[in-house]
Image (cartoon, rainbow, N blue to C red; front, top):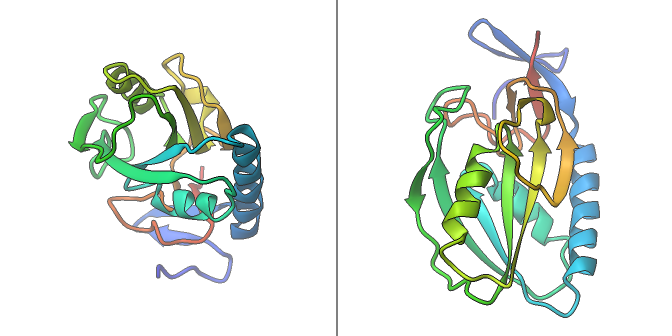
Length: 185
């Protein structure tokens, strides 16, 4: 676990990250999202599709708060590598193992930044014939959206700054933080 100093800051080299969203607020909002999704999918059996690696913690906690029958699958995209900003190119690294034709699917993202990954996912799923597709994202950066994408369920809107924790990484590290931290200005 990364060391957090007494001011609740994380120092990585010369960069300082400060608390943005507490673990308690995250869990409270994830519970609300799970309840809302359950109401919206009453009588249906949606497939939750987590986008690896970042969404795995959010998806696990979200499903603990979903009370309708559901299935789960994952696929993996890459657009960041070890950088703090997107490369502008999305690569599919792991395909789905399930058949989504005629099914309700819920894409689970950790963060929507430019919207590029969601746009890619929409194009990817246009090859299939799902009954419906919705997107839930823990975080959305409205100021940085470059594509017209619809996010159906939003955990938190955050400023256009680099964030880590609760699944969000910095060069594949710091995903295990319980809270979300933002790069100090």
